[in-house]
Amino acid sequence: EELPESQTAALLEKAKALRLRGDKVEQSLFNKRDSIELLSGDSTDGNDEDFINIENISSDFVLDMKYATKNNFLKEKVYSCAKCYVRDEVADALIEANRDFMKQGYKIKFFDCYRPHSVQKKMWKIFPNPGYVANPKGGSIHNKGAAVDITLVKLDGSEVDMGTDFDHFGKEAHHAYKDLSETTLNNRKLLRETMNKHGFRTIRTEWWHYNYKNSLKYKISDFTWECK
Ligand SMILES: C[C@@H](N)C(=O)N[C@H](C)C(=O)O
Ligand SMILES: [Zn+2]
Image (cartoon, rainbow, N blue to C red):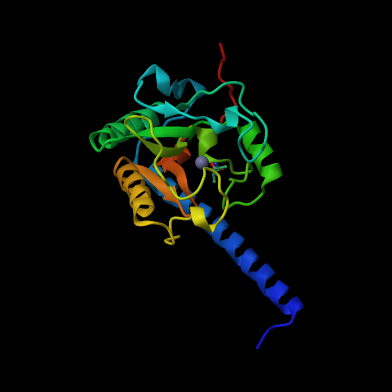
């Protein structure tokens, strides 16, 4: 028996609210897990000087910084130039992960790295959904220089199919979404397992987003890099 339209709409609203609540709980659990690690590990203030331009220490990465173009969900070029800055220890872990990928015939391509807090505010204004954009109130791990948005390319630079474009804000981008070809699922798995091995964690809704462990110790930053 079909439900009346008003009841269907109410149920859909309820499901959406529950999903949003789930995303908030996930974020708060992530922060708690990070706090526990922080208590058991060494601590640093995480000043702006602890950032490094990844291209200064390795030429083995590919950069495709989407927010330095208009081809992104903001439809605006929010970075003056394409650079990938991350915290020193995150850079070390990325180099190790990339070494691992290269042994298997792939390398990391970056879509985004450190992201100034002011850009996070802009993103939230356009798309205030905590499943896909972190609330600038608490800040994104990108604002701390400890998250990266990435995919894989083959060693000759050719694309690897991950099933959706970068910043596809829908269920097809979730790790649990399995209605994809075996090759695509294997590509996502390779990315996930290798990144996990090197200290990076996934979030439920974005196959491209990786948070480095123990990132709560880092402060939110708003510096912008130089473009020459
Ligand atoms: C906007 C998207 N690329 C992203 O990074 N989302 C996460 C949740 C974030 O904003 O931290
Ligand atoms: Zn991200």
